[in-house]
Image 1 (cartoon, rainbow, N blue to C red):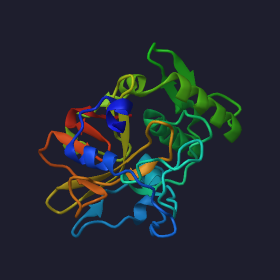
Image 2 (spheres, rainbow, N blue to C red; image 1 turned 60 degrees about the horizontal axis):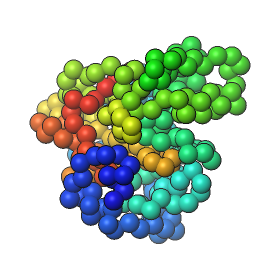
Image 3 (cartoon, helix red, strand yellow; image 1 turned 90 degrees about the vertical axis):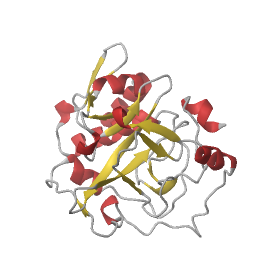
Image 4 (cartoon, rainbow, N blue to C red; image 1 turned 30 degrees about the vertical axis):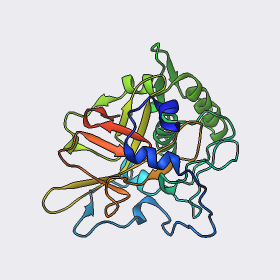
Length: 253
């Protein structure tokens, strides 16, 4: 079963169903109508939390989404399981088996810092506390090569150490990361957060996986009416299509 091999995670009945019904979504019959994260509709009475124009939140909301909802691997093949995604981010996975789960999180954070010319903040650490700092020339070609090196040396174990714990899950923000460090572990990034007048929050998650594949917005297997949004509630578990996280695994930059 894919889940147990890739992530050493506790399988749920939904995971079992999902992995036993692997299929390929045909782009000609299943298209994504939303051009960006900000275009994904909200449930009634919810509004997106406020964000500055130069913030990570605003940058994440403006990531373009592909019309084709198929998730492809780094080698160009369609992922066997096409039942996890709501939409696919229009960001290259490359042609090497490098940009996996934690790598996708690091890629999005680094892309934001690169876009806003905060080059000296593009820093990652490996599991032995080695430091990888993006240095001149500040070109896209050099950035791509730098990130490939980071992907090869860093992962969920090191990123979990680099990030800071979020003390209360209710404080969840776009850019936060659900992460379990391990060999392998897993990570999913919060792309957006919305709130209603009663203070209830909802959020959107995205992931890459093993092997390296397109970063994709996750469906909510626990609530078909809310998907792709997830609800902040009293549950200790956050059930995603291919992984089970816990509230205390939420971290921030």
